[in-house]
Image (cartoon, rainbow, N blue to C red):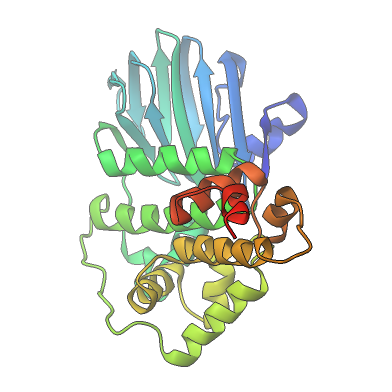
Length: 301
């Protein structure tokens, strides 16, 4: 994952994710992060004249952080007033062509994701080719807004724990898009009973073996031969918590074990040994689960 303030050298990567599609000359500030299947970031853009013929090869979702006065036309339609209030969302699905004109400086969060990544997230649940995701402007969706903000925050953060967190959020976003923003409505199937015992054991063994590494939701799901959606639902049924929360719990438990050792290993080193980005991240999750800091816990032994 790459996280940084954008530079000229990396503009091509953002263009590949449709994040700079036509707007580069008007950008005043932007920060972003890239992964294999997603790009997300914050953008501050000045007013610009009409931009036409913009083509999107990936799905692009943006959330207005400030009011936006705009005219837009999608897929050959005439441009109409498309003013965004704070928190309103725009969605340009892959294959969309559009023209834009804005008359004020504005800020927004944006998330770009590939159709392949969306399909893989729910691959054995539904066939994405049976659904159509039409482009849509100026709509409200509080859950989507929250997910986009959380994904952006997670991807722009550093550390090994955030990858699993953002993977889980991406999975939730994929399911939400299919449930609420397709032209062919379909209820996604519900699964009950949890993971078979042997698959649960494989998942737990993998997590325990890789606690100090960057655990990815897609890697565990592929290990078990199922989609991320399917795995997350069944894992929660089996363990009572999401994969992300389980990983945090196990990292904190490993930290407790290391804190009890007589060698007095430095807490910063314990944080890294348990897969946390730094001591601050360990302190945060340790306090949330145990009710005290690692240092206070050690002193109380």
